[in-house]
Length: 582
Ligand code: PEP
Ligand code: MG
Image 1 (cartoon, protein in one colour):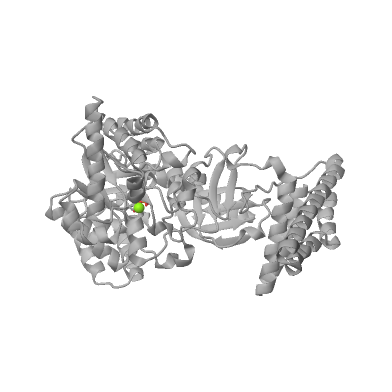
Image 2 (tube, protein in one colour; image 1 turned 180 degrees about the vertical axis):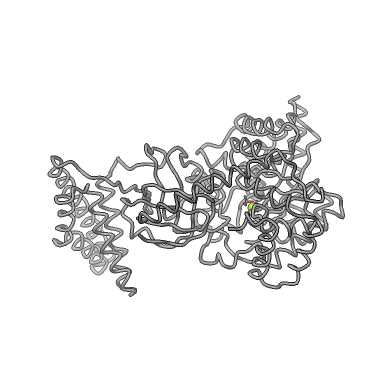
């Protein structure tokens, strides 16, 4: 049994056979062959080996001719490696004596040797380990050929283990068969992590390099609460996980009782809880759990699910579905926030070669550069706004000029719809995300020009602390509890109060019950949270008085490092709602 630690990003536990995705997304099948198929399996391996050898020889000749003999020698070394009789014998033994498939046997043997080299801790040997992984990929490509299995074509339940999953790959995971996933890279509020929550799939990211030790045959436990990945669990561990699964079910039945109860503090102050969604179908979870509306609809996932830009009609249908679920509550539709890692393959070239896409042409900046795309979406939102209380929200606003430009485009679209006599709501409310430090600092000025604010702590933390939200190497610096973040939020709340504008928090921070007393203490009365955390947040609200919340805020303000604030808040939540703290 092997236990790996990562970052817990979506709660729950998944237990199942590993589906291993290499960096080229090959699934390495766990496959044994029948006794009468062993000869043909071995022949298949030899054919793949031959193909790999002649491919490498081709590279060898080309490199020698173009760059010189010493470069050709790199490939000669690869060729010798893959033809090493000892290596081939090991693979043959697994095929002949253990009935392993050619893919499975090759992978096992090459990975075992690569791991041994990696463990030597020497740079030279680490490079040789890379060569072995490269050979593995090459052999698998020849073995699997056209039979490369896509994540979309699964037929039995699996736990996905991958180096990385892009947001669009995650969006396309088939929940019928994928029980949970773990990735080597990624951070707490990366979009892949957010999507795991949306799909309600237990997930752990940022595990660090561990795939080389796995062959795809093992049973794996993904513990999305503790952030652990357990490979080949022993019976005792499996048993205890099954037991806690039972406890979880009981706890969720208890939490479900809160659905119909109002979200208000002990002293009767309403705290409106809305849902954050990425896909229209999630509204059902929000309704079930008693959300009062949708505080953040991340519409970019309409773009990430397919390679084609969704038409106005497709968008209208998606928005209409959401509004119909909440005919009375607000539905805040955020305009496209594509960019950084959230890109459909068809638009990938926009960021290819950009050294720092998070600071580049993303989000509102991108839509302002692509007016047809922006206008199509605005038309669909304005039309859907005839069905209920739909509001528009612009993401990643960093300057007043940018906001004014976006509002001007909206004005143009309104004129067009008017001229074309299309039904729409001209009185739609227009708000903005406050997620760039410049906007938080200038909140007073912005508040004059929008109808509402929604604080996006995920990006606000990333940009304030200069910490990539998806990078596990700096995950220890990424914290909602950093005093700089708390001050920024308070500044925004004060500006909103001064101008009588509603303000909510829609970043992951408000989905974590430990921050509820703090946010309520600051004066927040609207929270937009992941569907999975609606009931926990409601419980935290209902166990709190506004006086207590203000006291907790006052004490937190005196602490000057994130870790102390976090520990203090956890301790307070334990007193107020013990069952929300493990
Ligand atoms: C945020 O940045 O806090 C936010 C809600 O937006 P996203 O996570 O989609 O960037
Ligand atoms: Mg954001």
